[in-house]
Length: 474
Ligand code: FCB
Image (cartoon, rainbow, N blue to C red; front, side):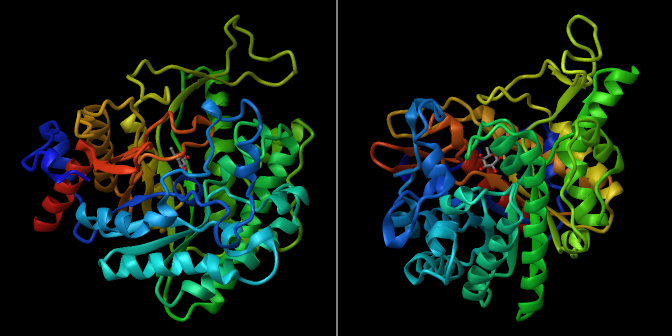
């Protein structure tokens, strides 16, 4: 950090309408940042940690941009106290981090690894000492490699292994941690990992990916039931989903159908079983038409729909969909209906994701209507841009700052329309290992110089700090 290099007065002025919405956020709204273990920790061999599927996947030639990996990342494992001090300095009240499964249960079996859990023990104590609420995510994609070798998430047993692992962490930290998320974005684990081969373990087996969806949800349910039963007091237990609004490109039937399918596979396939204990009939029928069956066993859906206290929503962008191919056909060579995203012609982030804040509002309002009674917290929202630091390492990241302003306004708008949203955690505390994009894409509100590991808050961090201060003093 270089405090002399950064301006201290107002760093960004959002348009008046956005400011007004943001200032309408309710009292008690919580503010924080999120990270995940593999993206920041480094120290992959320390204290008995064994490889996860991401360590393995990073060795696949061409899998990760520039051949990057998480071996060193942000060296958070050894720099943790300074990173906590940074969160404190930004005036945030909540820190969402994930626990590395192969650190605390090497190989994915047996009891707890005392040296591995000791890190999270210290982290929790450090956060509490600084007045920051720790929010634990149990699984942010780093499955122990041994469990993938045994079949991974497409195999039912992995759900039980996850519940056992969850209890090891829960027993160690529940005396101090009040908020627990089982899974981060099961869609990504299942689809990017097992259907599209874009994330670890890099498989391209669609039926296996659908089985993975079910076993991830089952693992969530098993862990939730067991944590609830063992909870020493009232705790908040939930899951985090990535979701978006799927807009139809027109009201023609093929476009409406394409949007329905995208929404079904992306959002309802998770929310319906979690909230109502059933898979959506239309999605089940679509899958059946492809010869795919969700491997549900008796009692699974009751487990999956174990009550949760908080639904985490991660939002980055929305898309519109068409059911027409470029040549106008509505059925592809594989005999399946066409489903294709079409640009909304909006500005894009460095991820090439379109910036669609109203998709955020529509998503949150939609969920609150279709699945009422479920308090939500935004557990991730943010944007990658190509940052240019000045000689002090300071980044005047106007694009990212504006993104936060429009998206905070979108959340406030959703609340005004009746959605129950209790907080907002920005992705991410600092630049980090952005999965298949390696270190090329920067989502941090704090810049990390990977040569020196120096952290420098960007304009967006100072803006969020100011928003939080204003909110608290209102
Ligand atoms: C989310 C992930 C997070 C990060 C952001 C950009 O899908 O949960 O780890 O990669 O996207």
